[in-house]
Image (cartoon, rainbow, N blue to C red; front, side):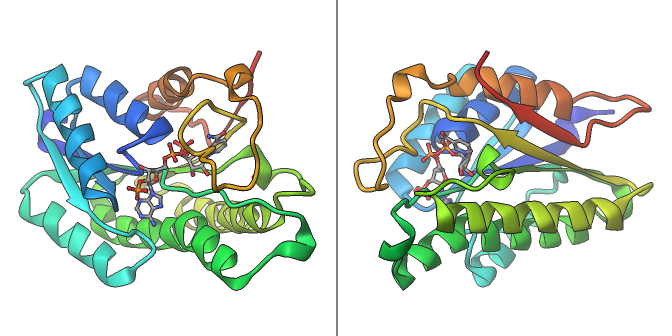
Length: 236
Ligand SMILES: NC(=O)c1ccc[n+]([C@@H]2O[C@H](COP(=O)([O-])OP(=O)(O)OC[C@H]3O[C@@H](n4cnc5c(N)ncnc54)[C@H](OP(=O)(O)O)[C@@H]3O)[C@@H](O)[C@H]2O)c1
């Protein structure tokens, strides 16, 4: 495989886990396109990632991946790069937490757009773009997609939805050229736990996003006759 003709998209590649995934891919000399909404974060992440290694390209694209028109623009941009899309890491996500009787529509839209709608759109357009040439779609969810948590009802609903969708496309792509990997990380020390998220856990005890990213990228880059389809990553 000539990796220098290929490109990986990382949604949420400007922060936390997505940024560390981008860094691991850069360390392997892989062309990447980082995606996020905030232009200042995007510029800063792209310049840090460009400084790592000159062998491969770092593209950046400002985009709300919950918006279908913007997702179409993103895939057009990748098509025009003349690089072959062969990996998508869907890491974009937002947490908004509350007791179940304090939920409102803004919270639902914010959480569902970033964690569920975005992942569905990116996977669907990704499958079309990769087509017969194949590739890998790596959907980052959460251990909140595996259990119910009292203050995380909307977030659990979005992540369980993302898991259901991911399970369905795993079945749809079985035996074909595109591989789908479902990832369920536990708590990580990232800006995800912002002051307005509604919870304030002691993140100093959480996993380092680089350690989690390294596990994910090592598996994503494996070229083997066997396939890892699900990854759950927790603190030791
Ligand atoms: N941190 C944890 O404890 C934890 C645990 C398990 C799973 N996760 C999941 O892991 C993933 C990464 O989280 P993280 O901890 O790395 O969070 P983070 O540091 O807050 O990063 C989230 C990234 O997603 C981007 N993003 C959010 N909404 C977006 C949208 N609609 N369109 C495009 N980009 C968007 C953000 O950039 P902009 O704001 O500029 O768009 C940012 O780059 C998420 O899916 C999260 O749910 C996190």
